[in-house]
Amino acid sequence: MSTASEAIDEAPTDFRSLIDLSDHGPDTWIGASAPYSWGRIYGGQVVAQALWAALKTVPPDFHAHSMHAYFIRAGDLSEPVRFEVDRLRDGRSFCTRAVVARQSGGAILHLSASFQVLEDEADVQTARMPLAPHPDDIRAPEGGWGWIMDRRPMLSYPGAGKSMGWVRITDPLPDDPRLHLCGIAFTSDTIQFNSARSIHPLKVPESEYDERFMGASLDHAMWFHRPIRADDWHLFEWTCHGLRGGRGMTVGNLFSTDGVHVATVSQEILLRERRPSKG
Figure (cartoon, rainbow, N blue to C red):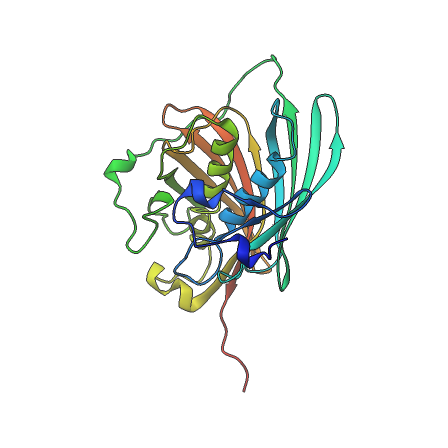
């Protein structure tokens, strides 16, 4: 059997290559990381790859309706990631999977996901899409995403506790609903930090945030409500429910351009002020 490092030839630079996991034994797959400039693996990538690994063990008539993940430690860009799937339950209408993503330093993510056979039941939407400019009318952030994901965040006003932004996967994807769910999962670890930053008592320019704060995603949950195309624009609307102990609780709704509520997301983030070490 080949080693994990031999299973990956080069760093992927598009979503379809990123999600193309290599078999590495029973219910085990290996994934590569894209070459991110900030020095660690983007959390949305590990979530998307873990969800894809889980989907590989699920019958095709089952569709993901929810997932929950813990970010355990930062991922190392220089190493592939090993995804180990545990088949927790196979029922007639629901099945459940757990996935652990590992590198040589140990587990970096734990994800659980539930899948359901689609049922012909009531379809009612109460969430309403907020007013927002078209993504083409929003300037892309300097030095931000220009590959795999296109991201158009909007200004978050101090004290608002809210943030919004458009996201999409840049490369066209085939008509595989499972692939689009993973694409949306990839985009879901973004935009939310601005909602928490806006309510922090320490007001600093955005350009100084990395110097004044240490931030990270702690845990992450998604509920998938309706069909999604990840290569189309979607609007994230995030609200921060408060800050406590260096943690912020954010909840978001995801809408298609025609106002359909396709997913709900929640994430607890770490927003810790950097303090001088005591000499």
